[in-house]
Image: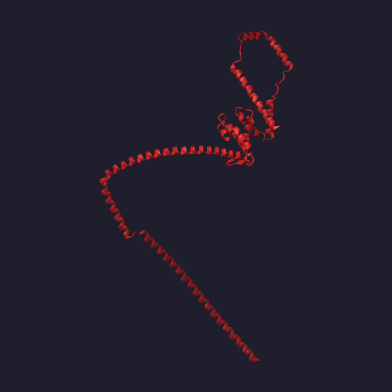
Amino acid sequence: MGKSNHDETTSSSMSSKDLEKLEKKFKKAEEKMKKAEEKMRVAKEEYEKAQAQAQSQTLAQKQVQEEAPTKGEKKEKKDKKRKRDKDEVEQEPNAEHQSVEVEQVDGTSKIEEQQQDGDGEKAEKKSKKEKKDKKDKKKKTKLEKALEAEATSENNSSNHAKSVEEEGGAKGIFEDGSLSDQAKKNIYYAHLYSISRQPGVEGKTDGVNWKFSKAKQNWLIRNIFSSEEIPDKYVELVLDYLKTIQGLSKTNLIQSANKIINPPAAPAVTGDVQVEGEAKRDEDTTQEQEKKDTEQAEQVVLPLPDAEKAQSEQIKENLQKERAERLLSIMQ
């Protein structure tokens, strides 16, 4: 029993000594590792510092080499300078001859500039002429397209061909000297509408597309009763268009036609006004009688221009009534 206790005590004391030894070794090893790390860090810093210095030296040498001219370059510069000085010395005797040549060159340059100015004016005139030709050609092309569209519609409808022939067609409208420019555009508008409503056309032909215009329609409505703006040969064409209008425009047009056919009666004079007028005339009987006697003695006759004017007005009224009747016959 006593022996076993002694063995345990001995083994425990040995194990504690071993631990102490191992701990000391571990600490020494740890210290060595720290020293090694410190040496490594110092060595790394020295290496980086040396590397940076080497790079800076390399850059400095490179800059010096780039800035400093070589011996060959210096020699080449000196040779060029000698040659330039020599050429200047040789050119001095010929200075007068060169000045004469310069004057000749200046004179030639002036002549060339004048020629260029003349060519520039010609080119400008030519450019203006070309622009004008293009503009005229564009107008002509527009008329040609209208004529082609008209020809296409003629093939689609024989009845329309007959009406176009009677009214002159697009060409006849634009070449009619009796029409104002405004009348040409608006009558052609009605003509184009007539073409667009032919079978197979449906509002569109080659190069021509009819589009509604309120302004053109209003012009036709205002001038349908005017023989100056819309001559007789275009009345049927315009009426064919106006019979398609609807709404308030149609109502107003019918009212205008009725007023032309049956103009409003003049307001009746009341009895009191008549009596007052008769009393006033009685007071001036003597003066009026003397005036009448004088007029009869001179045998005053209505001047011919006034008679012609009255006749012209009557003809104008008759034409307006005729057009109004034709309009009402197709719209009611």
